[in-house]
Length: 295
Image (tube, rainbow, N blue to C red):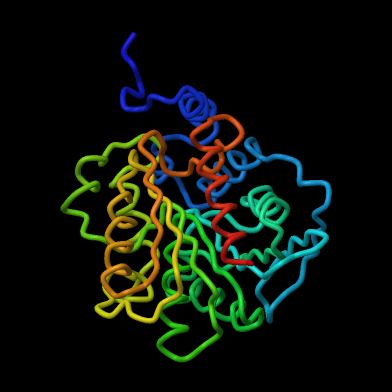
């Protein structure tokens, strides 16, 4: 029998992929939006974990935008978390245990946002929702994975541009930042397990209207005076080079940018943090970075 995942060397990630494909088909983008969201919800629920015992939650709204806060006993800072899902799937429930563990382990008060989804609400709807919640929270760390990493970087750009709320740090986890899809990892990892370049094209085209740096942060030409960054790139991911290029641009502009490059990991590996040691180690590095910025 041929190896379905020849590039994946970590057994935990292989198990994660095999379990996940039973719930979220590789060709999910060919299904209706309602079906894609049902697949994703079931997939996320399957890899859910109990909250840390000392974390309490409460739901609220900023205007009409649903939010959930995760509060440890003695939070040291506030953190705004923006979920991934290609701008078209996901919400508070999809990243519930991830946010709860960040709150408990990093000792920060986490607020998650259920921003509006495309294609019903294309750019800038999701970005505007996240901007509204950032203004509600004020001084905080901003973090996000995948599409949420995109909006994390975009919020940092806008906050600097308009002298908005001070962002203590930006945490980007395998972000999609609008890079050139004819070069680099978009070619070498075009058929990566978990996310393909074809998927990225679909998500990007569904989300954005006219080209804009707040939709594609790599369009920016001035990266000076942005918040310090901690970034995680997965090598088995077409978005890998977006993260690398953003880190290089920040460093060239004199912005602190710490980059963790994961040779054994795939897109969405956060969900495998209890199955894969490399994923667990990477999640621990994210927690450590948040703790450092929160101090």
